[in-house]
Length: 448
Image (cartoon, rainbow, N blue to C red):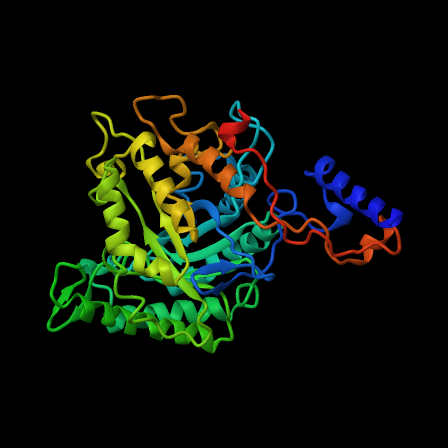
């Protein structure tokens, strides 16, 4: 009994005094105790290798120069004016920022991100709508930027949801020509050893397919009397891509699209996709400008009508969302983002928290960080976007606190079986205690 008591004391000491250091030299990732392993879908949850539910918090990051360093020469100068090398350096820097848990921005904690929605940019692969599709460019950026970044992201505890920055001509997604391109791209990506079944890589099939073809016309909105037929056409389209991916032996989690601007998912539970592994969920976009703005009842109604049925059957990844209050002189397009922390932010938090299976990536780095010498878009060393501007009520500070709260419920492996474990505890002590337990830490609101 004395030996067992001593073991318990050792465990408690490690839990409370070593929260920011590797325990028994095990690999520690985005924050202390966070395990990095392949995720998979079980029911309506994304789960880790121990079967514990996981929700991911992160940011959307296209790979092009515009969305990284933009007009700054800082990374170009450091990398011999090599664009791919400069982009990769930027991606590493911003990942360091978003996984740095040390206190920043006047708070007592840092960022706690563990997902990036990494889009292969049109700068490299061209665009379907513009007729500039460039498969060779996609291959080059994959080898020079995407794969090296995936490897780096793994060392930081970041899951990469890989997607494609295509726009589709006339909002028409499900043409045979488009399908041929998607199958070529996903067949190539899924066959890459560094991507195929990689622990930290997931696939988002299509960005905002908007319309599909059925009954002689293009459509995809719930008010249409043949909305289900349009979903079935998009289902056929995505099933073909899934089949291509799985034929390469890739078992990565897949995030599938709905109609509209990734808005409409009501038929998906009764009319599911075909995945031999059943390892998929749905990527959803969530904006104030979809009609609710700061109205709580309208926002809840949108969730209940368009997404709830899918969320009850599958995990959800909100791969785009942004809010801030627009001001005179802003771009008309920014009305899509016109919401406040007190309205859209708090109501969104309530809905996602209640669902219990919602991962998310904020759209995007340029609405989280200010510009600076390293980037005229979003400088990894700059402060939070519009922080303290009460007119804007922008999401950056809100998410900074919310992501920290979400991190406290992440399943943490405190002690794991390992050869090195026996060097630090008595020989007869258990080496698999407190595995995948949950640590309750004060939320941002409680601790400040």
